[in-house]
Image 1 (spheres, rainbow, N blue to C red):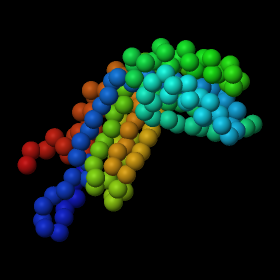
Image 2 (cartoon, rainbow, N blue to C red):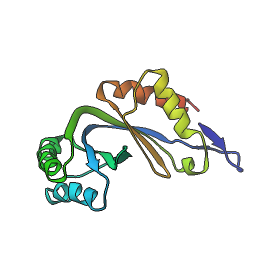
Image 3 (cartoon, rainbow, N blue to C red):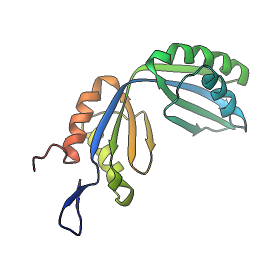
Image 4 (tube, rainbow, N blue to C red):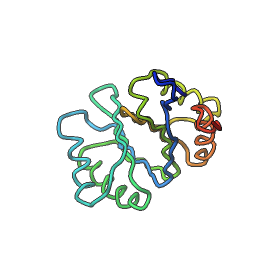
Amino acid sequence: MVVSEDAGMESLVVSAVTHDKDQARITLRKVQDRPGVAAHIFAPISEAGIVVDMIIQNTRAEGQTDLTFTVPKKQFSAAMEIEKKVAKEIGAENVLGDKNIAKVSVVGVGMKNHSGVASMMFNTLARENINIMMISTSEIRISCIIEEKYTELAVRVLHTAFGLDRED
């Protein structure tokens, strides 16, 4: 996805496709949706020195929510142990974990001023039958959690979709 600038030079809206296979996903299901619950979930993770990357919270019916986050694979077991204890304390239904994931991201400073980047990313992955499990965005990055086995395919097709494999 290339945009022309006034000076006639081309500027890439998306300048890179990155991936990270060192991710694991943890989900606390049916957590009570009330003030302080997220703090209760993440305080012991922080105290253990575990780094959290993406966090997604989904609302459910009847005052409940699901909360999903990613941690480095090497910290997954410790994080799961902590969250199983936390789940009992806060009355969550259960804790699910998945180490077979990867994060694929498209990055570019031009993204903040152009529409269609997310749509192109999602459509490109869909054409390859790659399911998106989580999505996180910022002004210059869109990240998707996918099954780890599709990492190389996802990187390759996104690279092509955004014109990053073109020779100038």
